[in-house]
Image 1 (cartoon, rainbow, N blue to C red):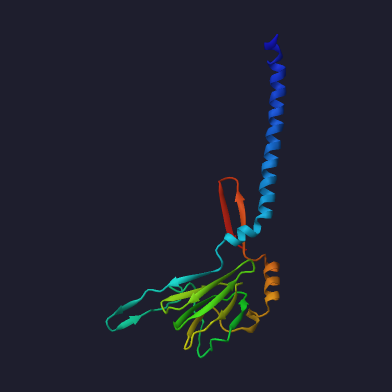
Image 2: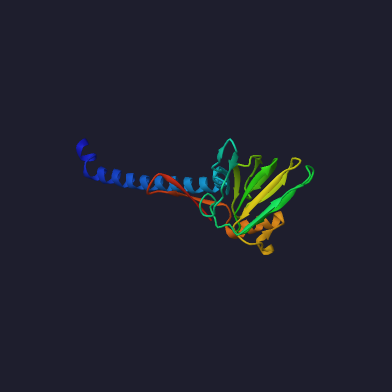
Length: 202
């Protein structure tokens, strides 16, 4: 009798319950991932690498001195279309306070030091530039400020585009607005086919 109760009829019921529970668990799991992603979106953005990095330049030298060669599309990751330099900025003066829509730059402190504040709309980081063999790469859609110039500081800037005032964003609120309109920063998505997190530029 007991065997009959748990044979075919109960087997079908248990199978249906299992299927329903399986679907329900899958739904809960996917909902959890979705809402976790929404709640932790800023966490993903914060953990992503901002659109800047430091480049160690290859130094050639001997007892006579040292030399560094800069070549577009080689050790400089873009075609160099413009070069300019800044000097005689007093320590109590600040510069920058803008972002670029498409422009890329490499900045080198040929002499002295300068503190950069870099902002991608989600977080702000600081970089002290104080060596002639290190370049600071800043990509597009990055707000930058320059503070605490040392006396005699000289900065050389390599740019990927010719000067165009329309390329500048000089108001921070406008910068944030442009990021929002363009999607801004980085997007992240969970790939279910393989247990990985893909991040890609917006």
